[in-house]
Length: 267
Figure 1 (cartoon, rainbow, N blue to C red):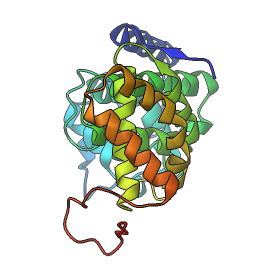
Figure 2: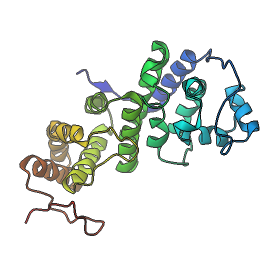
Figure 3: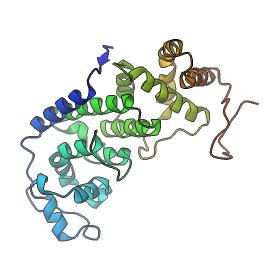
Figure 4: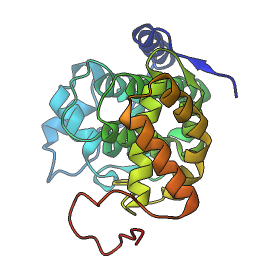
């Protein structure tokens, strides 16, 4: 796979958003008023959702993105998401200030049981997927907690229908700070697998075994980082965790959240 250079993440994000804006410059029209759950949304808010997407308040947009799919008319749901997608991306990205909920929940609404992103017009879908790739690169590089990165990957995989391509994308990332971010990700996932505590919060079809199969492919990268940074405990622990996964010896670390009947530690 070709390496994916991330030398200027901020510029890449701006370029990705510009491409999304071009792809969604003429959003689809609604042929009737928005139908939705009137118990959760008053008629005035449903009417607002059908008007110019730029005039919808951030709070109302957030409520739409979080609300379960069955609260909306199935024929309108994808159309609404296509109208709001440029704003949604900005809320998930750097400086978006979205602290309402985990992004995996909102991103997952784009999946096959929701807005069906893979079936959108090609120009729109490709622009969104490129933005996802940049969003993921920024998440790996910017030093945020590893749980926030894994949550983002879950949401993107759920939205697009698969995890493998995004793991390959992470593996191909190159640029300042990327190796450190990948090492943190490897350790986080490997520890959870050793503790049998890796699952997906919102993606019921996600298979953690895909991650387990991918982690050994990053061993050389973690080892090279450990050589360059001999005092880095994260890199050393990442190597230990991957080796234990491959050998089946179990975790050398005590499970941090109390007794867990699923836990299988080495004797």
